[in-house]
Image 1: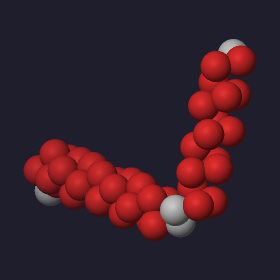
Image 2: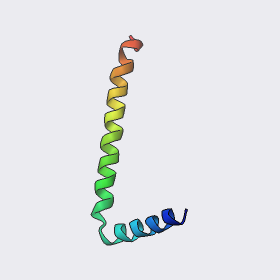
Image 3: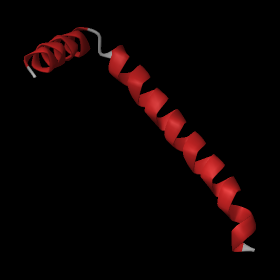
Image 4: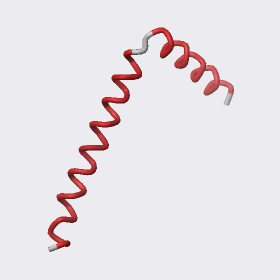
Amino acid sequence: IALMGLAASFIAKLLQKHRWIAYVGLAVILYVAGEMIYRGALEIWPHLK
């Protein structure tokens, strides 16, 4: 638990210093979410007809 707190503190300081890292992370999350929505829609589309 202490190691997780230490890592979280380190990551928070890193994100404050280099804000672009947060935007890259957001872009990755949005890409993965969009990909999951698209592939899931393709999977269920035949069952909706």
